Length: 578
Image 1 (cartoon, rainbow, N blue to C red):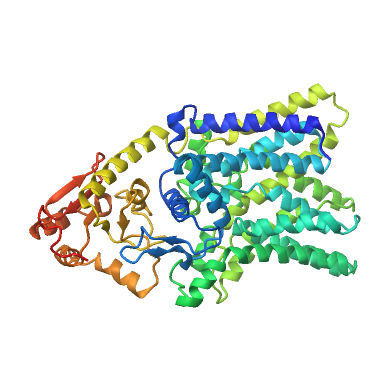
Image 2: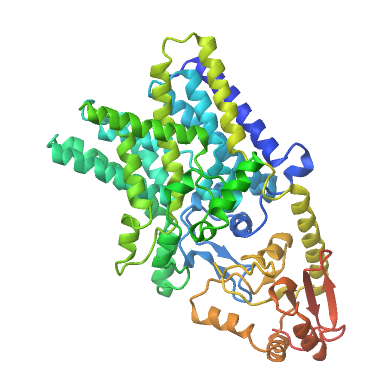
């Protein structure tokens, strides 16, 4: 199916993608690899989830216990749906071998490399020329979307299966070729089941495509085999997703539903919809003038731009492919000639994801809002446009000499990589390293001071997950997880899933006036209190004074002066044992 030359080109392609990735994130030295590529917001959540799985050693679809969070009882993150368990578990296995942060970096790099390999092999399988397949696979792997999502949205970053799934979708629509059967069908079912265990947004739109394929063949009266094959593929997709939810279904069967754990608003569907103008404008770009202009005309001045995610830019190559795809389809329809299904699938995705589209209409119904951030489907548009572009370039350059084709393909890759890779990275690694070093020193000193009394009350008291960020003071969502990631034995009050009466009561306790908070913590037998000054209006001054009046006068402060721990004075440690 693939020749030795294909595998040689694939090796060179992966090497090129790796070099661009390493240069973009500035990971040229061994110390830089010990620092994660992102260490803020959702990246803390992803790292904590991986760390919890690494510490527990449980299987990928088991109860997601976090005994060092939600102290004193411990937390169970199966109380809210996490559908990328398989991915997190895989990274956790790597973390047990090489350490948490190097494993996380390798998982990010692997997502880019897998995307390159998948796109190249699919394009070659569909008949695209080797040069164009390699160039466009490189552009796909180094997408603006990927560099935006990075570690803090690791499940969205792993979109490598989309070319495989879309190739299966296009085959399912075919009215000329026989329907899938035998081993090809078994392989397609396996890929669909795997896709169901990865990112839910991608699975949802792929499932819609399979439904459309079944309806198309039903309308054509093409025979039940053609109808049943996409239905079976959609069923495999759903089955894969349900496997990822076994732990949550079991937990909620035992403890009851928890709709407040992860709240979704119908208004979010429009706010976070996919606006076509966002496909054209990069928020960050190597060409500073373009970046400044796009922010001035849209991202920083338009309310829709300020309140959404900013990963939607398709890049010049992706945009050229998308426009060419739609224009070619329109011309063929005008001439009453058959078209491929790339353009109709693009239009369906837009019809679903744009403001006022099908997702917005579904959100108006009295149903739970599940798919709110449909701007994330821009990567589906990019996948379709590059697959279509590979076929178009192959057809239009069929008579070119190989040297000319490879030269043009190389130029295309260079343009795409320059256009899409983020320079400089969002978080320079020396700054991340400084934060981690400060946190580790703080955690080590605190662990030494508390001894066996490892339960730590975290202030400010904020719910988990998705409490939101205070951008004015710089207190970012999930920031309390820094202490979890930096310590080995500390058990934090933060991290139990909200929506349960006892958990919400514990959070409410931390929101009482300072004197009452201090009184209850002292009486509760906690080993220490850890405050993040950025999350408190007065920097924690009132709380620190309240604890000091009750004999908790020992303090440990971080090098960055953002974290401070308060402990009982010497001789007072056993006054109120838990």
